Length: 115
Length: 114
Image (tube, rainbow over all chains, first blue to last red; front, side):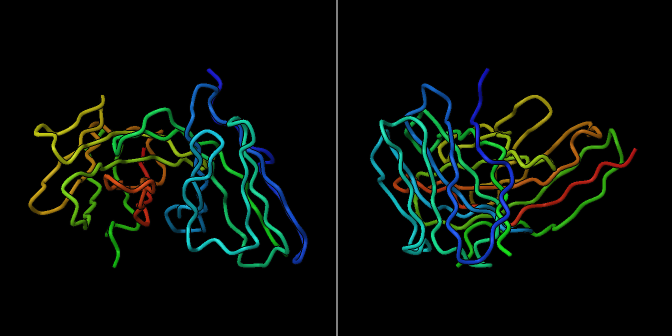
């Protein structure tokens, strides 16, 4: 059983650098989500893809953040000109269902530390 | 306005005892789903249980049950016969019918004592 895979698990970068994270969803899942989680908080929604189409993007997401899902398979999340406030766990999730009873399958996340 | 409230930042429970984790929610939608996820120290969010707003029976999944009180807008998680491996963060979340987002509470850290 191959679950959701995220790479890297940890990333340490200096302020101002660009970083890119990768998410490989469960192969038959057409829906993919990115969430961000800071210490002691629940996750916050960042963006959502159905196949290759980015259907929703959080207003919290600045222009420094961009996500892609070419060909509707893996997804990348890029943060440009990182800031210390970007330090967080970035979680990817996928699903195959479309209603509000949709169960999400999460990866183990990428922990970003911006120095 | 906060939509999901988990009032217990942390709980200690003796092994084999039952534990109830509180969750209240706020929505004006009639159609919504409520979820509980577990997050161990490894970081991965693990789905535990789901309750739909129109479900008349409380959801159960093995040792997990959801005490759904719609009029009070509460969706408490009950874990029966707790085990050491249940030690983790537990999050309550809600998805409204026409919204792609899951809205999450701040979580409860559960520690099971041997």
